[in-house]
Length: 439
Image (cartoon, rainbow, N blue to C red; front, side, top):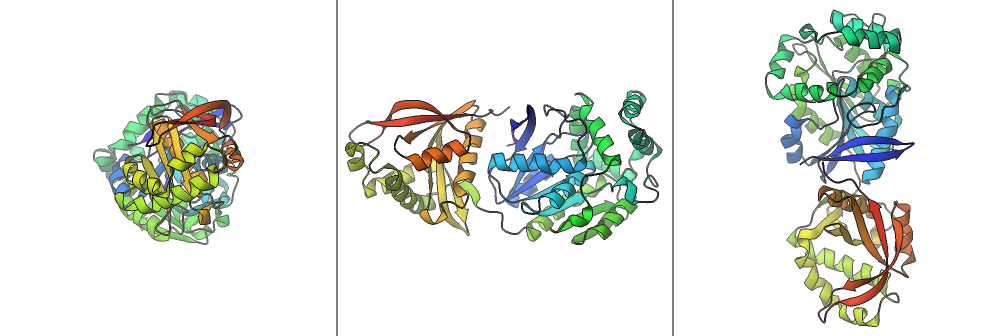
């Protein structure tokens, strides 16, 4: 399932974000022009089988993402960083097609501490770098980009009268569009049904300075290019592969602009093979995790609650009680693993983030932030607009943690903590945070 959220990123801007949920390797999908950021549907089963979590977003001006006139290609890195931060994802790969591939390359160049590998399919190159940049393009595509080079007004006028030109695509492309990659037509139709801001700003960005040099890429990057491509001609892929010191080039002589996606599963394999450590791995808890969850829960609860809750509750929270409750709560629990071992967990019930605990040796490493972001996503996926949680009033460390992550103290309340003898009233602070429910 793909969850869609509108993420506020500051400055009055919103980005529509798509997320398939926890998996081993996060991959940010960068869409083409005109498209939306929905992850590539034909690759969803292959990604799931490979432990890949898709994250996508509508670039500014597309869908419900706020327009950002004057953006350059490199600005995609800023938006991707904000999205990754909001989701609690430290390290990730990027993959893009067509114009999205240029934006994926921007992330690889400008986020070397976050991006671990980049796959760029049918990528257009920066305009000043190739002597005859338009050579090999279909006439209609070249005319569109020449209009963009003349400025926004010229491009607006051109797009107002231009019609779809099937000759921009090869026979292989049309075969792909009539098969499983008909998905491209679906997402392009959705994009074109909205305002033209996104496409205008994309085309203007392609012909302007990009805001980065592809030579700055230091992570593994794969270029996949069709020898018959009429939108981003072969010379563009060859130039980029020669410019990026860490590049590999898969040149497919008989493919066009869309048909190169036929190797999508192989590209996912390449990303898996070239992805280094990505940080903690999230997954649903399993019955065999119960002992590890109970141990983390017991020690974490004592660290945060002794001296801050009624003696009656301390007496009820025996060591054995945590081992009794952990197996009963597996269905509510997501765990974070590091090197295969459970490092922390979060329990969510409805709109309440009920428990967040991290093993002592992993505190301060970012595991807690990743778990909290996942809890917010789960609440949103349940259709709730706000998440809430309770913190023992005297637990200053936990209160500072939640406040750093955007949670707001809404004041005191009595929390009915369950025990074998019945609920125990515990004085707590109620914290809340807006989330956007699944659309």
